[in-house]
Image (cartoon, rainbow, N blue to C red; front, side, top):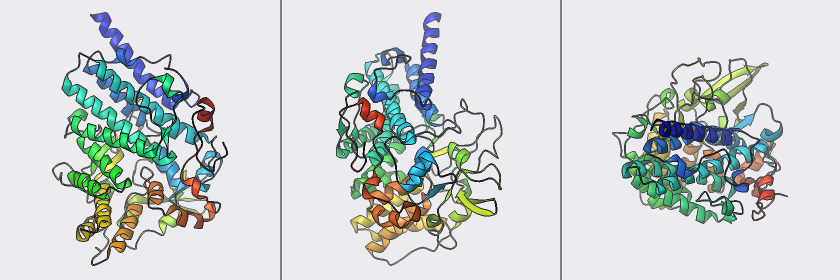
Amino acid sequence: MRTNIRIRYILIYTFILTIAYFIFCNGCKKLIQIGPPTNSITTSQVFVDSFDADAAVAGIYSSMSARGAVSFGSSAITIYCGSSADELLPFNSVGDKDQFSRNTLKSTNGSVNTYFWTQAYRYIYQANAIIEGLQMSTSISQSAKNQFTGEAKFFRALFYFYLTNLFGDVPLLTSTDYRSNSLAVRATQDQVYQLIIDDLKDAQGLLAGDYSAGNGEKIRANKWAATALLARVYLYKKNWADAEAQATDVIENAGIFTLVNNLDSVFLANSSEAILQWQLNTSFSPYNATTEGYNLVPSSPTRAPFYYLSSQLLNGFESGDQRRVSWLNTTTYQGKVYYYPYKYKIGPGKTSANATPTEYYMVLRLAEQYLIRAEARAQQNTNLNGAISDLNTIRIRASLPPIANVDQDSVIRAVVQERRIELFAEWGHRWLDLKRTNQANAILPSISIKSTWQPYQQLYPIPFSEMQADPNLKQNTGYTN
């Protein structure tokens, strides 16, 4: 008995370390091009009981919330997609960073390969392994199976949402069968979205409506996280009625979610506005900063920022907007003032070893749901007053005057503006919004650093190394290899 327990703990420990190794080791091979990793455990070995399954799911959360480490699930999408859009500029425009800010990505770009393609598919592999392991298990209670399967399906939907919005058609892998995965073809975006919708609907039915899985903290996906992401997916699919319905379900949970009046407190751990946050992972760094805080907030008021706000974004704030006061800050370097995102206040200069984190990394929050519902209502043109009310909820919190008595087109333009300002430097919202609303080709070429803009650059290139490994992968239009 004691030997079995010891083996089980070894397997769990190995599983978590394997995830960390795959995601943070840049030199490892890509999932789609290799067989099962020789140093990982199989799904049949993992799930002896719910303790093992819980450890496997927790391993994904842990990997995505490593402090200070840029990764797919922790700041890479914000930073690099913000550079692709008109939000952020790197202080040192060299190499990979320069390609994002100028929209001149190469298929050999290491950040595209590592942070977006490879890491996303590693996470998908782990989600598939969890789903399969739970299906095979005969010793886990049904309620535990529901929770862990629901979380795995939520993860898979989240990863595929970003993959298809960044790359378009992508391989649709739903198993751990490395033989078929290694020769995968690109599924259509419609097929990918259908899997996302199916996974999120399943997750809604499987996951609890409270935060008991995270011991009361908003650090693990529940029914409302799945609902919030599904609302966004329906918005992107232009399924306005369903987007409105899903967002309404979240908004009407006033007992769980409310907008935070103090803008400085929105991104605190377990804020009332949070629907899902990543808890900080102490195993990678002892400091109490989120990855975005660590990488976007200078260590002192006279240090150069790693990234700073573009003039286009700065000029987009209306006079009196308190989001500019609370969510931006400045540093002066060699006599020049740079603005940088300040939604997260804790950066490398304000960290304390082993201190209890006061901020968690925001994944989904209530303000986005108001903006989703406002846009869905405006597009349907059956409840403009309701759309205006949702917009004014966001505007009034920012100390801006409410809007009134405007037509449908004006409401839609107002939604675009509020999304740009409310969701700046968060999970690539601006980059994805420019594309889905067909504004990228009109806005981006007017920016001097993006003067060579071409429409095909709305999609990132498929990594060249992946195409070498899988002869069935075809490159996105416009890229040479």
